[in-house]
Amino acid sequence: MMPDLGKYADAVLSAYAVSIALLAAIVVLSLWRGRRVRAEMEDVERRRDG
Image (cartoon, rainbow, N blue to C red; front, side, top):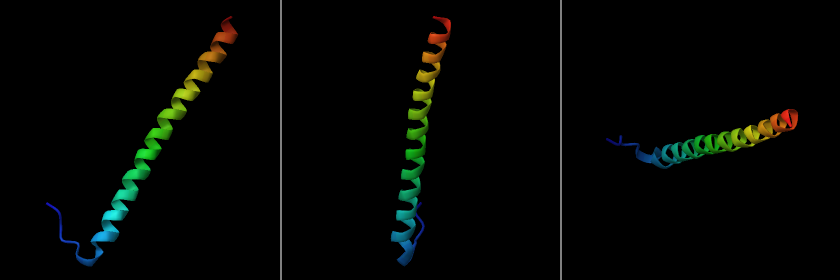
């Protein structure tokens, strides 16, 4: 299943690892920011309705 990468194996596999880590970080930060913004919006709505 894994192709023979020869002398480039380290570079290719590390590039994959960095890419996966960056994608995971983007997802986590997006979820975190979404929760924060949602909480701020609920706070604004509570103050408006209260």
